[in-house]
Amino acid sequence: MQLDFDFSGKHVVVFGGTTGINFGIAQAFARQGAAVTVASRKRENVDNACGELRKYGAPVFGACADVRDFDAVGKALDQAVERLGAIDVLVSGAAGNFLCEAKDMSANGFRVVIDIDLVGSFHVLRQAYRHLRKPGAAVINITAPQSFIPMRYQAHAGAAKAGVDQLTRTLALEWGAEGIRINSVSPGPIDGTEGFRKLMASDEQQRARALAAVPLKRIGTLDDIANLVLFLGSPYAGYISGALIPCDGGGALESVKPPLEAAGAALARQSASE
Ligand code: COA
Ligand code: NAP
Image 1 (cartoon, rainbow, N blue to C red):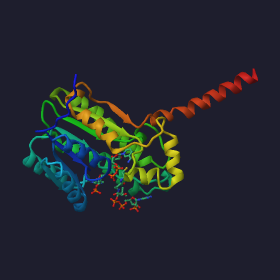
Image 2 (image 1 turned 180 degrees about the vertical axis):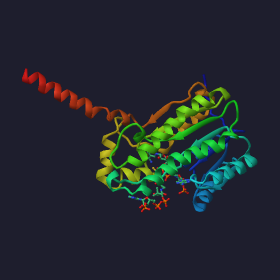
Image 3 (image 1 turned 90 degrees about the vertical axis):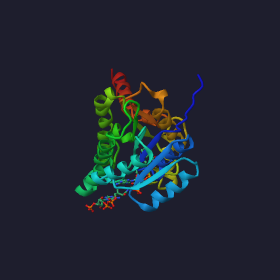
Image 4 (image 1 turned 135 degrees about the vertical axis):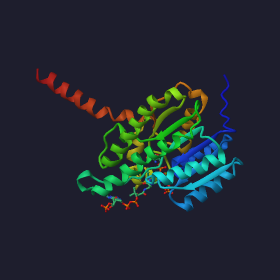
């Protein structure tokens, strides 16, 4: 079978889609002929993203909206649908993050990340529901490995992304009968992005440690994530719903090693003493 990822005539909305990984996703859909809406907080980011996306020749709409504002998200989606039609693919990926130990984190610091990542995702999904093409729409939430791997300095983001993944599973149950599929994509470290710079690559030593932790021994690219999201948004993924799919060069697998190595060492000590 020859695969054909033609999205002409489809409307793809990427919330938080003006920079980084999510913009890479918006570009990939535009390249494949989709009409694309991108939305985020900053006018400058929205304008830059729309300018780049128009180069692919497909219809583009940009909206400024903070995902923490339920009404603003609703208005942005209403306008997008008025211009470009019902939503065939919705990508929800707006996020904020910083490194901070829980004991040093202010209540507001914890809350702001929960508000953007988790409550914001609910706002986007809830407001988009009435506009999703039924049957046939695909929804993709962009989450992160800390949703299922506990990571130091990530109490806020880990809790938020775990919530997003549970939203994915719950809505796959609730919306499945209407022909809506919903999945989570969990990127590993992705080169050239704000998330990678902030969390893992502030200096060369950190970057080398991040690379060493990936079994495939390379840092991911924007296209690695975009290709998976294109697939999930296409009919070829027509029987996949409620899944959490890591796209991380196998990085998540490393997290199960230390406990097993510790268990192995304990067993070795035990048999040596017998
Ligand atoms: N360490 C500890 N606390 C921090 C922090 C840090 N590096 N950065 C922000 N905070 C705290 C602030 O101190 C504040 O708490 P306080 O009122 O108790 O002092 C709280 O977080 C909110 O910060 P504020 O700057 O007002 O929030 P904002 O809404 O303007 O920005 C952020 C939200 C902090 C998440 C900001 O980093 C952001 O907008 N990020 C988007 C881009 C991004 O992070 N991309 C990577 C995605 S993985
Ligand atoms: P990024 O470039 O900072 O992307 C975040 C996007 O969300 C931006 O377009 C930003 O635009 C928008 N945004 C932030 N807060 C918002 C808000 N309150 N309302 C609306 N839009 C908002 O970061 P990235 O690293 O590419 O991350 C993208 C996604 O991938 C995130 O969900 C992140 O958790 C996930 N991820 C990234 C990595 C990585 O290696 N980079 C790894 C795992 C998971 P504005 O500033 O204009 O609002």
